[in-house]
Length: 233
Image (cartoon, rainbow, N blue to C red):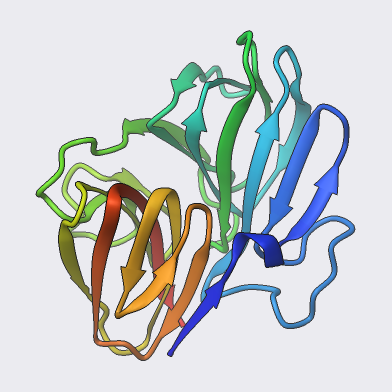
């Protein structure tokens, strides 16, 4: 089953400095049909004005992933971590037993990003933070950037039975991904357009996927940049 969720159907919030679109119920956006998908609880599509951002605030017991689509974001937290994550980079903050962090756009342009929250397997775990570049090379299919599985190689660690995968496809390029039984996937086209098992997704559209053994993804004439999270159902 593949449920296409067009960008125009997402929840919306405008705060002046922040324009947000919500794939799932969040803040003032209430939608009982879209509260989560598998272990994915939040997927926000945010645009943050230059010189603004999220002031220091706490989180706990949540795996928080940020993928920067445009511009850059500067992270600081009370664990001593600090980093500037530019377009094409991914960061993982495993909030665990508790962390206070800020995320600021210190650039002179709007920063656009996806913020993804995944519910953890274990509560009260030791928090951690890390970053990784998005795969820009075409022809290699999906690359695992973060994972809670033991055989994930150099992927950033997650405290959840989940995988964050990404792919850059050239114009007309296709790739496949196996989705084992009992797994749910959420796919968003970050840039470009593509079809997934024959169903079209335009830029920033999403597909909520379950009970599909194989995904066949074909990039449109402009190519495509894809972000996918799979978790247990």
